[in-house]
Structures are given as structure tokens and as C-alpha cells.
Length: 628
Ligand code: ADP
Image (tube, rainbow, N blue to C red; front, top):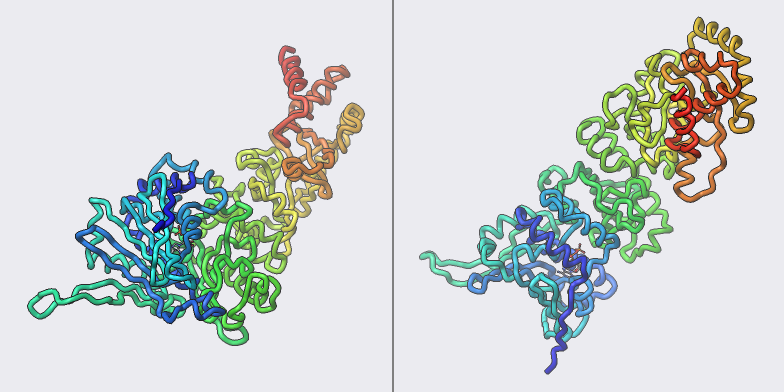
């Protein structure tokens, strides 16, 4: 009889993953058992869900569990479950390929540094393949719920380049995975070692985990074997908060998120009354590798009345909180809820609102109580959170409160200053929150636009993330104070201006008005305006835009995204206290005057935009002037 055997090559990504994993996870190899139990638990969840509408899938056996046994002589460890099972096609698909997009690029970037790889690869979630860390051959026998016993499948692989599948008869529904342990991994063929690992990793999952234990008589003679349940087998979130240890919360996080690292914080809430639900939200400590992938899977695990309904239910969290992990167990949603129903549902909307609030409060609390941890969070997820001011108007102020920036009042490029910190130390008479945007921290920090602010000791936030300009188009004020760019020509310092100085400046302006007119005539339509500025100390000239005009950074973003950019016309501002400007103002020769003015304008443009339209002309001019 043909059993229709087929040998197939793994998808390239799987081969890469297997190779990397065996080396980088070797120091933490016992996690393979956690991964297999976690998969069994998912398979049980999936069966329960399907059986809601098709109870016959239980085939008279609704007592779902996972069983672990070992055989010292054969050197095998077997993990079996009576969950949803797999068909031949499913086994080929799920155990031969990795469906996530971007995997190839991710894996290719690994392989340089083992310590780092193990962290990254853990984050990636290796699941079933982790069996090959300890086994040199793995056999998977499976039969899907609801199909006849002769439609079972045997999947076998040595974890190298290929695997084979064949049809088998399998009476019991579900999946049985047998690991042929490597010669030096026999430590797992030990009841106490297994108890220890399972206790550590699997106490919190809802599915009973049983191991086959030996029974002895009074004289110590072996009399038989029996299955013994060795975990609590009560879904963690259904237990009382006070009874759950931090370790259990952390392990549960790893189970649901497929992350190997501990979460940063979590919050577990039971809500009764109008809405009845339990939520358990986690903030990961590391951003997932595909956080900015458009089709990155995210969202909460959804349960309805303790029955698993779906993974990655993204409707319960806004996009800017897509890094949040966890679960929601609702008593108000119907058991037959689908993604489509969730999309347009009053209960969903109310839950999303409540969970968003909860997540924001959780972050606020973290920022207040554990600033070092919050700093880690901000490094990993700050960019995503910034999307929030454009996405969630109702919570804008609360989101903005969570932002952290670099500033002229701190010594490093670290983003640590909150808008509240800033406002608390504003100068007397200061009405606005001042900021500058640039391509990099260094460019922002050294911008000539800061000179006056530095002189007066007024703090300026230094913004250099790509998203900042976009973010600022939504965040125009905070706590009633406008956010004001320091590069604006019409910047009004209000009460911060110094009256005595103003008098002196006015006199200067009048004395040099002829010079300003001369420059205007020379530059004509190329600039929006020419004027003197008293905001500079060390720099002879800058260019600036008006409040109602697009800033340079914004224009760059437009250009980068391929959108038409309206021409930015700058105001050319000259510093009358600067020696170079004084020298130019005194030049009688028209052609020398023109050369110097052009040079000042080019310098100002270069400093503002980082590039020039005609660099060759600039170099030529500099050389001519240098040669004298
Ligand atoms: P993940 O669990 O992250 O999806 P895995 O590599 O662990 O990745 O598993 C891949 C897929 O194989 C699972 O998504 C599931 O569809 C299937 N699978 C693994 N173990 C089992 C099992 N015990 N029962 C049924 N299906 C399973």
C-alpha cells in the first residue's frame, strides 16, 4: 500500500532560521518544551473555538490536555495533545514555511554576533523549530479534528535541508511530537528535570499538562505508570491578581507574545458593571523587528467568556499603540463574533476606548514611578507613540505628555525632557514652547537659530526624528502654550525681549536701512524679504520662513515622499553686530558687494538645508574671495 511519501526542501528562510537558532539559543535550550506546550495550548484553544459551532469535532473527547512522556532506551521525548491537529497540507505549510513577510531580510541581517542574535531571534518567535536545538530528528504525527483516522500525517525531519511527509492512520485526534534527543541532551529524559521545566514555564496556561510517572510499591519496586497533572491548569488571567507572581505574569507574556524577553510592565484588570471584561496588557521591552512593516501582525488575543476567539485582534488598540501585547476576555461580545462583526460594533468601540485609556495610564504611571524603565520604553517605541497625536485627537494631550525630547538644557542627545518639564522651567514672561527641527541632533543643536535663545538662557527642544515635523502639524499647543519653531522670521519673543536693547536695535536698523535696501535690490525675487536680525551672535546670516509657511524640514519630507513641494521662499536675515556684515555693508564696489552678499546667502542656505542648488558656484566664489 502506498503511503504517498514525499520529501521536500524547507523554504530558504526555515533553513536559515534552523541554523541560526541551534547556535544562538543553545544556552537556553530548555525553552523548546515551553514552545511545544505553548503550541499545544493554542491547538486546544483553536479546537474549542471551532467546536462552538461544530461540537462533533470533539469526537466524544472534550477533555483537552497535553501529555509528555519519555523513553530512556530509545532516547525520545514525546509531547502529545488532543487539540485541533493538522492535515497533511497544513503540516507542510506550517512546519515547512514561515509566512511572515520580511522574514528573509530579518534573518539575513543576523548571524554576526551570537549574543545579539539570540535576543533578536527570540523576539522573532521560533516556536516549533526550537525542537531542533535538542533533537537531531523530529517526528510529528497529527490528525485534524473532524477528518477520518486514515487521514493522519507523519512529518519527519532531521532539521537540515528537508523534511518528508506521508499518510498514516491515527486514531486519536491531535498532534504528537517525538523528539529524538541528541547524544548530549539526555538530561531531558528525567522526570524531575521535566517537572522543573514545566513548573517554570507552563503553570499559567489553561491546559492541563500531564506527565507519565512511575509508581512504586513500599519496597521501592516499580509497579506501573500513571498520568499525573503537574501544572495548575487555570488560565492566568482568570485568577485573582494577588495570587499571581511576577514570574507567572512574565511567563504568560512569553506564551502569548512569542517573545523570549521579559515584558517591561503589565497591568491586569477585571472590570464589572456596564461592561464586563478582563484585560491583561503588557508593554514589551524590545520593539519587534517588524514594528514598521505595513503588514505586521499586532493586536490583542481575544477571548469571549474564557473561550479563545482569535489572535491579533487589532481593533482593540489604536495603531499608535500597536506594540502593546496581551489579551482581552469579554463577557459582552457574542461567542460567534468575527473580525467583520468586530469592525462595526458598539461594544468594540467602547472596549477600544477603555483599553486605550488604560494603556496610556499605564505608560503615564511607568514614566512617573520608574523613569529608567520609561526611558527604555521611549527608546524602543517613542516613534510609534508620536503617531498618536495625529491619530487620536481625544487623547492628544495625554499622549503628548508621554513624549520626551532632547533639549538645549541637557547635555546629551538622549530624549529625556517632557513638555511638562519644559513648561515648569519656562522663563518669566515666556509664552511659548520653543523647538527646532533638523536632520540630526547635531544639526539641531548647532543651528544658528538658537544663538539668541542660548544667550538668553531660554530652553529649546531639539527635534530630529523624521516624524517630528508631521507630529508638530498636529501638536500645535500643550497645556495652553503654543509650540513655536525658532526658525520663524516673524518670531515674536513678547515679554522676553529686552526694552533697552530694543532701543539700540532700532537705531541700528535705521542706520543700516540703506544697506538692507541694497541687498534687496541685488537679490530681488530670489528671497521673500531681507532684514536685520538681532537673534544671532556668532553667525552673520540665516534664512527663515514665516509662521504660515512650510518649514525646511517639512519641505524635505514632502520631497522624500515624492510629493510636489511648493517652493519655499526664505527671508534673509543679517546680523548687524557681526564683523563680516559690517565689512560688507561698508563695501562701495558693486561687484565685490554682490560677491559677498551671495556668499552670505549661500552660507545661510547651506546651514538651513544642508545642501545647495549650485555647490560649484559656491566653491568658486569662496576660492575667489580667499585668493583675494
Ligand atoms: P507559531 O506558533 O508562532 O505560529 P510555530 O513554528 O510554533 O509558530 O508553529 C507553526 C504552526 O504550526 C502553528 O501556527 C500551528 O498552525 C502549527 N502547529 C504547531 N504545533 C501544533 C500543534 N501542536 N497542533 C496543531 N498545530 C500546530
